[in-house]
Length: 108
Image 1: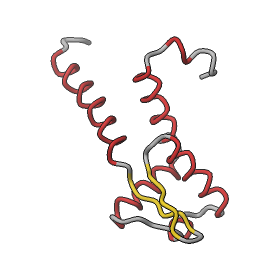
Image 2 (image 1 turned 180 degrees about the horizontal axis):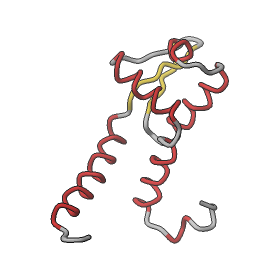
Image 3 (image 1 turned 45 degrees about the vertical axis):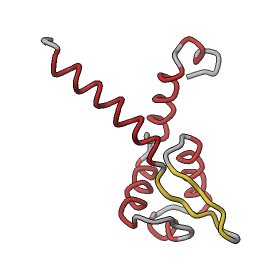
């Protein structure tokens, strides 16, 4: 979506679209699943878990961080990543609302 069109939508709609776009790549889903599995902040291990080059993994981490799905803390020369629960709370509320409304609808 072009930058000139986003002003026609609410902040919430733009926020959900940004999050959904960040989730739109299987490597990013794999990163999130790995962070959930290890249940702690991870520095360098993510590159070893994916069949991708380090710069590619870094780009995916940047996209996830920009969308607010993960947090990164600097520890020495490395950035350690973990899940940002607050953004997943936003997604949970959004999809919970969709489920609640669709259960009430008598459509198709």
